Amino acid sequence: MTIHHPSFGTIADDRVIMFDTTLRDGEQSPGFSMNLDEKLRMAEALAELGVDVIEAGFPIASAGDFESVRKIAETVKGPVIAGLARSGRDDILRAAEAVKPAERKRIHTFISTSPLHMKYKLRMEPDAVLEAVTRSVELARDYTDDVEWSAEDGSRTDPDFLARCVEAAIRAGATTINIPDTVGYAVPEDIFRIFSELRARVPGAERVIFSTHCHNDLGLAVANTLAALRAGARQIECTINGIGERAGNAALEEVVMAIRTRPDAAPYKNNIETTRILRSSKLLATITGFDVQPNKAIVGRNAFAHESGIHQDGVLKNAATYEIMTPESVGWQKTSLVMGKHSGRAAFRDKLRALGYGEIGDNQLNDSFRRFKDLADRKKLVYDEDIVALFDDAVVRDHQRVRFVGLEVWAGSKAKPRAVLELEVDGMVQTAEALGDGPVDATFNAIQAIFPHQAELRLFTVGAVTEGTDAQARCGVRLEEGGKLVDGQGADTDTIVAAARAYIHALNKLLVKRERTEPVSLSA
Ligand code: KIV
Ligand code: ZN
Image 1 (cartoon, rainbow, N blue to C red):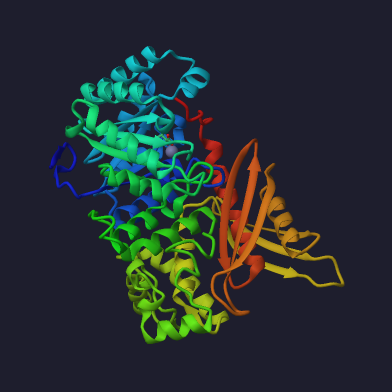
Image 2: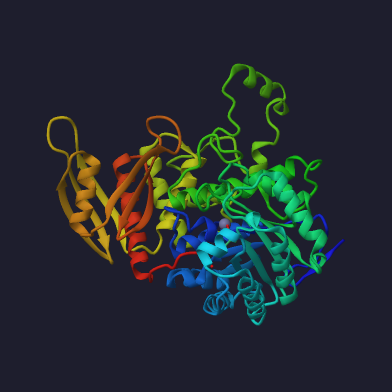
């Protein structure tokens, strides 16, 4: 059977809508906040990846959230742009205003339906919740034909009450019905039963798309998502790298590759260009400063690495012995020596194109080309991963108030480490000298001397982009100011320079956050 949807037209029965909430559910988890430029860059990458819906944010949460949803709605072409709203009038009007410029827009409104949430969180009687469902969906429909309604904590909701709420939402005009496993409590059997029952018993169910939104608290988000598809759900809510509240959401890359690798068990279609998966994953890691763990399915560094002799021997004879999908199908390339200090601008542009960046503006190209030359001078072998790290870093750093100019450090076991740092602050170059307990501490003290601030350093991490002693270092810095956490990230062949870049990146994010109003909590 086919469904007619206001944004997608007639949808074949085996077509699954990919709804990405990296910029909303993902972004609202601690340490994963992004500024406007970063969200825009990520939204462009999601559009290129082929997601059908981008949930761009929660517009009433803060002025910054509103602004980024609005900007994404204005500029990102292709996917439907969705804004989240609780059931109240102000939330819905704010979401409607934010998504207004989009070619295709969605308001996603939600309210809790479980006994626990209604009693303790909402302090509302079930009948009042039912009325709010109707009111909120009707109001949202005044602004767009594409309205999604979610039953927060749906998997722990009484089945009869859930059916009444879903019926009310459909009657009021919802075109997508989402049943989240908000706390990641369900097992696949629960999810299969919930979706099967709703589709069988709710009047009008055949006219809407059912959607699944699974959290990963028991590590079951992907399994539960596939169970929902088996029971007839045709929209998947997920995030890149599985980021999201607490243990995260279902990982887009895992769900998509499960469908692609096992068409016998999961006979569904979607529009994801799988060869762009790795790029999106790496971009998110660069922006947020959080790498995925090495053994992460699909996008982890070891996902296609074969260490044991028996496995290596098998893969050399026939890759299918130990590989259920090809690394190339998700965007991995055989690491190759790509370019050196003699490579020119055109070759560099070509390389970026081959790495999946598409057409690049001259400003971005100039900046990253300069840093590439610098890198090629200092590092014998320049790998694809180095170029990706360097380019993403340059893009993320565009339009920042504080910029790194230069650093000199004296360290060792004899004298107290000393750093002389040059920064450009609002266009003016300033220099400071500082001592510290180590070279990193001296550098951070020099930043403090040039740009005094109250933020506390909460986390400092160091990793390597590629292998060898001349590898680029990737550093992460987490700062906290007045309860707000920001993460910065920096890459360079010099670990201390990478640390300085990461600190400055975090500082810039903090400056953006300071301009935002206080966020409100995400509860209906
Ligand atoms: O997990 C959840 O219930 C949510 C809703 C707001 C859709 O994220
Ligand atoms: Zn969620």
